[in-house]
Image 1 (cartoon, chains in turn yellow, cyan):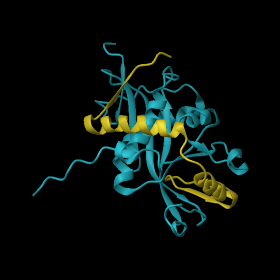
Image 2 (cartoon, each protein chain N blue to C red):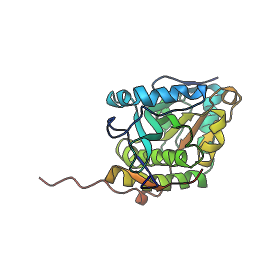
Image 3 (tube, rainbow over the protein chains, first blue to last red):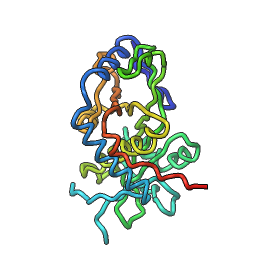
Length: 61
Length: 192
């Protein structure tokens, strides 16, 4: 069993880790959080790719 | 400061995006500071990573960044895709890794990191998935960042081995995240 990340981005899973990954991927639908991130991200990326930048209102700390 | 907006853009030359004053106080974060100040442009020039930076509009100083790179997930042939019979014959699944995410000291807690991650997800969905295919986004999360990534929809690989790691694996399955119609079509090719 192993979870191994290499220098150039690759990820190697084996044994129970690989099986669990498969199980988590196969089960259920995308979460609302994931869908919301995707929708916001697509809007931002569309603006970024068409104008060279994406603009957000600054949020106070 | 004349303008209070934050912009996110691809890292460009030093006269456009100033990284020399990017500082992170914690010793554990120094590699992130060094990467943006010294290595990010070289890494992009070598086509190894791409870095997106956050700045206050009208100011050249970089206040945060995210770097992404092509990756793969190898699963020892244990992986299946429900709507593609025999997909488990493919040993590797395409992915994009979030290799670094950092905010300069004093800029944490303003949701800029969240906007950087959302933008990176969007870039993958808009410009990589329709052109070359990509199934997952992956990252190795510092423990303090796990809740942050969960709120963005990433899942923690729930195994004993992974949870024991200093930086456990988290992933986002990109399938069915958005309606295909939500991704703008690529511009039409000019007619000869």
